[in-house]
Length: 469
Image 1 (tube, rainbow, N blue to C red):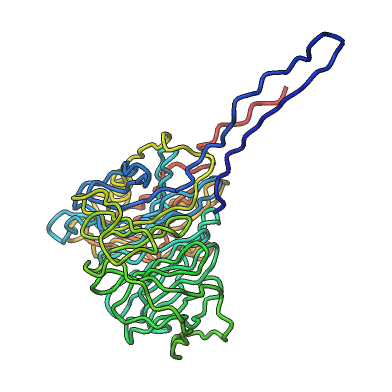
Image 2: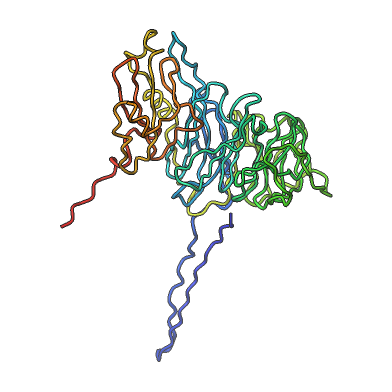
């Protein structure tokens, strides 16, 4: 992002007249645009998602979390619709004990949340049922996409979201068995669709192109245990976390490869040679959990040993220049670009994600009469999605009759012990999307409308227009 320039306005008006001396109008005081040219570092720690001012070392929690309640991915800075500054995205997976047939508990979901640290707001972007993993890993982002790995073992998939689109769906970029299982490790800067991924099977590195849906060769030869990586805003340097011995910095070409892409990663990567040897960054360290560059590419932030460490690059292989948040169990970092139109003093804390997580659990609980050992096997759930900014016939559905099902095919859904779930990938979206639900089979039809952010449709939440006179 462009650097902030201080605008100095000096206006001198000399008026000449027949009087003995000319009169000068006073010079106005200098006017400066608001902004944070050095950017802010978003981080994930025990107490929640925070932002750190690298100039002062002060950390501010902007989305509080109860320690141990969620597995967290990210955070990353990325744009949001109708907002002039980047915001913070992170993922959360419910870590509380899941329900069983004879015991209460939670239904585990993966969530994507968006936090505006200058407005003090938090929004759910999407959610999906996930009973197999601890949630998304390798969450990365730039000025157009966020991407992540979701799943378990040989079924890892890569999902992405175009954050410049209002209410857009989460897209599956690669999913076995049609494509290899990939780990997301980094992303090219700007609005590039190139996501750096490592093959789960052979350890090879590739660009997974979110814009074109293809696999491109990766320009460097990296090891099967290397990563994550962070690329400077100008796309010329990459910091690579080693499995041990800290990190290294080397040159990279992060522009779109000129070689022909493939639909899979069946071909070998085609690395480009670099004349300069990699530069070591504190080789006495163990494996960093996250890396991110300052806006000018002169400092590298690392989440390592539970704290944030800042390194001047280039610098001798040795200890950090600064250490922040020691003892806070920091596990992820993301350094924003230069921020304009905002001030460090305007940071506001939002509510944590737990109320929204618990609200979905309450909305998806089976009716009492259906939640019995005898009735649960007979219970059927039908779920429809609709855009609630306008009136929809779906919001008036009261029963899943054959005529209704033929005209409005429902989403895939099922009963899970004491709750129901929609089972499609990232099918639960935030914003103004709402879901009409009919529970039937074991009980008389029960119809409700639910949503991630609110159960009230946006069309009915808007004030009515004043009558014309």
